[in-house]
Length: 144
Image (cartoon, rainbow, N blue to C red; front, side):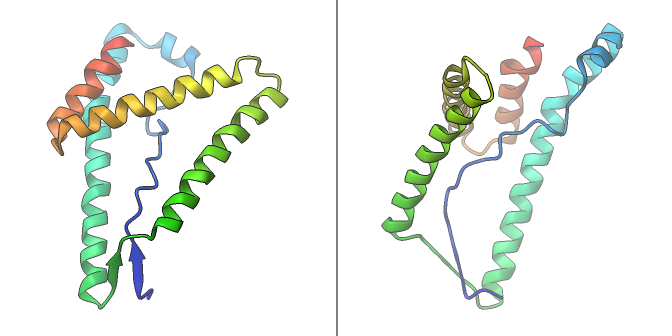
């Protein structure tokens, strides 16, 4: 077992793999079937996110109960992580352009703007699962 674990806000995984569907399959669904997805996915995602949070808290508690120490990272790590994030953004744009995506920079910029938007939405929810689910419903699933 590790002696220490750092509390580092590395960011979220921004994926949608719990709900990915081919356009042709989606179009073949009846309006009622589509609504069943749209009406339930915000709750599904909220349940998944809160389950991860509970698992994280339980793991940290068990770690500490077994003698582990949770520490804050030093400034050198924080600075190195910020530098790595910037390099990753630049590399992503470069790779997209190399692959022939003409608007790669605009796509990445839009994505980063959405990350900022959702970081704010999550902060505004102040830990409320219900507020998070409501935001998902109105900001995403009601618009499909």
